[in-house]
Length: 513
Image 1 (cartoon, rainbow, N blue to C red):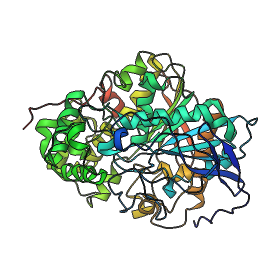
Image 2: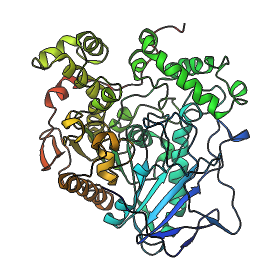
Image 3: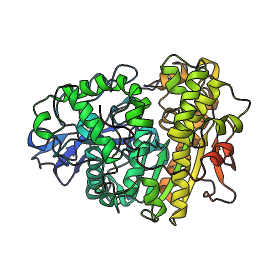
């Protein structure tokens, strides 16, 4: 499907707490891009918690997305559209609104992108939020946050979880300013996918984020949060790639690109460090939120089970075949043999390799590998988050996407990140090019896409996405397929295998070399 260029007309002006901004009217929406919510995190602000943006005089043009934070290149070799500006004003938000009318008080949805905590950009065409805002008649905000070493690495003398603190600052900006854009600060839903969903889960557990949103949607929650010991050891390894100590003093003189290169150098070495970094090693991702005991006191599952976010309504789910995306990107789709499958089962299966083989006796080695990787990294963390919220007195709605991506004859299945083009309607951008093969979306895909937006925006409006809340008796979930249906959670065998498993912070399992 070719997405037409926006039709631009009058230029709306909104006054924020820091100054006035001028946006554009595009296809009936007022759109504002690149509004700073914090000072550029450079100079003496580098590696620090975000600082309040300095006010400006006059009217600031909010026509273009802000610069992407320093990061790894994405799968397609780019981090965003080719015309994004350069610079260090990384901490910006973008707003789509039907009308910047303070009396409108529309529900607000705030998107946190994924990307393994090391890549992504709110200006990516994959996150064009105009369909969500228009279909749901609500306000949508997308944001940037620090990534990689700048945002998540353990650095002595710097606060942990700087990327999460950026997200908190953006949500505080929404509370202070969204009414001027026609939004209701009391009806904010934060939603995110993959690392964005991991961020949402962390925000639910962070005291600093309390009261900043009313509802949350977590799409494919990764179970990877680091213990302080693991984060410190990986931080030391990252700094060692540039011959330095992991301190603010040592790293301050390096350019952001040099820190990105350190992460890129370490990542391919990680699979050889299973004896040191355990389950984190094969992910080739040296970044994750750190359960530091301060900003993130405990892992999200323990926080929710204790009632930390019982007043926040939660929608959470995952895709049936999450891991197939990564296998396909590695050129190994359908080709995993016994040795690699056994290694994955030994490392990840909570009851050991024998338990998975007994539970799925007809699965091939390739299927067992895909299944345990999906269960460990996304499916069971997502389901357990819903169950923890329920145990803590909250309410959760659960879904599973089972509709297969059409590319490669359906071999990708309902793979990781397939929910993004379905939700945003962006079928020819980023990973959707792999999942849909660059073809026009079918009527079936368009209908499911419309269903996604209707459910997500209904939840943002009322807390009810259109299917029953999850409970541990019936375990009803929304199964999103060509013909969506409400049914008991489909992955019951996996659920039983993981019953009682605790998604605690990943530990440092071996001594530093």
